[in-house]
Amino acid sequence: MSSVPTKVWPATLPPMPEVDFSQFGEFELAEVSRHQQYAGAFLARNWAQIPHVTHNDEASVDALNQFRRDYGREIGRKLTPLPFLVKALVNSLKAFPVFNSSLSADGKHLVMKQYFNIGIAVETDRGLLVPVIRDADKKSLSELTDELVDKATRARTKGLPIGEMSGGCMTISSLGSIGGTSFTPIINAPEVAILGITSEFERVVMVDGEVTTRRFIPLSLSYDHRVINGADAARFCHFYASQLEHPEQLI
Image (cartoon, rainbow, N blue to C red; front, side, top):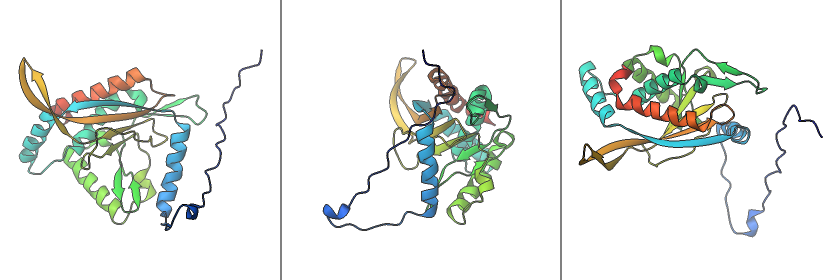
């Protein structure tokens, strides 16, 4: 009987095909930016080497929408859903510490983080950037709002230094302002999960025997199946949704 190998080497993939497109018709070449080439290489590595699974769920946001409007008037400023999404993620990471970990390069240990830094994917003309909000657990909704606006603005104009895009525990990728019902976000290694948010929608539901409408946001949680199992992913999303349904807990 052959012995079990102690190390599994990644499969060698065949090269991408070199195609002469002129045989099919006219075409033009468009330049791929250096940033996009750089980011694409890491995305390809993460997709190829991390066994991704995506769990889809949804969260009721009627209470959140009303609370953020009322609380915004109370503190004298407009609040978007994003700082609440960040706070809910922090609480979820505290409740499920394995999501706040990283797998060691040899796959033998989990680095259990005691800090809560949240990455926020930002679309820019140069491609996707992910600024990191450090110590998000220690910041108020107003402080989170100011930092989110500042980093998103600088990411889209001047860009951000690598230090402001490093050290994340988990990332939020929101397409809510554009559209969609679900997607599979690619994990930002060495993180072990990423949360995708898509467009808020309205649905007819039964509440206490009465027909009414409720508003929901879809949640798409991609996770590293080497570290997280499906049942924990489902529990994580359920807990996250419950945080948004009771937004008064987030302040």
